Image (cartoon, rainbow, N blue to C red):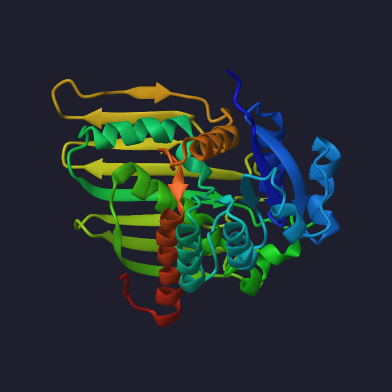
Length: 342
C-alpha cells in the first residue's frame, strides 16, 4: 500500500545554497510534496521557484495553517530561526532547521522547548552525519576499534559565502552570529559528538579577521577538552584560496588507546588502524559525491512518518550543544581565557 507523501512547507530561504539543495531533494523525493515557500525577500526564493516550480506563499501564517503541511524546512537567516521554528511548532508542524540552530543559547533552548511542548520533532541540518565515511567511522569507534578516544582533530575550511551567490547577511555579525567560527565549527563539533559520543567540557579559541576584510572572523582555531579528558582541535577558517578547485574541505582524525582513524575528503578515504585482534587496517574508499543532502532529507521524512527522530538525524539538543561550543569559542577569544561549558 502506498503512503501519502509528507507535505512540506519551506519557511525562509536566506541560506540560499542550502535551501536550493534541500528543495531539490524534496521535490525529487517520492516521499514528499512541497506545498509552498515563503520568504519576504524575492531574491531568496527566485531560483527555488524557477528551478523546481515550488509555489510562493503570500505569508508564513497562511502557509503553515494549511492542512496539507506536515513539516517545515527552516532556512532563514540565523537570527530568524527562533521565530520561524516557534511559528512552525505553534502550528503543530515538525521542523528541519538549517544550522547553526540560532545565534544565542537562549534562543536555541527556547526552540527546543517550543517543539517539545508542541509535541513536534526538531531536527538540525547537520548534513555531515550523512556522509558514508562519517557513518563508517562512527561504526568503527562505537564498536571499540580505537579503544578509548584521547585525541580528536577536525577541520571544515572554506571560502566566505559572498554575494552574488550568497546574500550579504551571512557576514553580518548580528544576523549570522559571527563569521567562520560559528559557520563551520558547529559542523565539526557535531561530527565529533556523533562519531565519538563525547561531550565538550572546556573551550579555548583564537579568532580574527586576516584574509577577506569582511568585518567578521575569517580564521579561527578552537581547542577542546572533553569530559573524559580527551583533547581536540578544530580549524573552521574561511581559508580556502579563491582559485582553489574545491570550495571547502573536511577532515577528521581520531586517536584512541588502541588505534587511529582518519577521514580526508580530498582523498575520499577513511583510514582505520587498530591494534585489536581482528581490527581493521588500511584504506577504505567511499565517494563524497553521494548525495548527503538527499540522505538527510529522506531520513527527516522517514522520522516524520515514524513519529520519532531516527538515527542518524541530529536533534535540536544536538544543535544547541554545537552552538554552545562555538559561542564559547568567541568568548574565549574575546577574554583570552579558557571557557567552561555547563
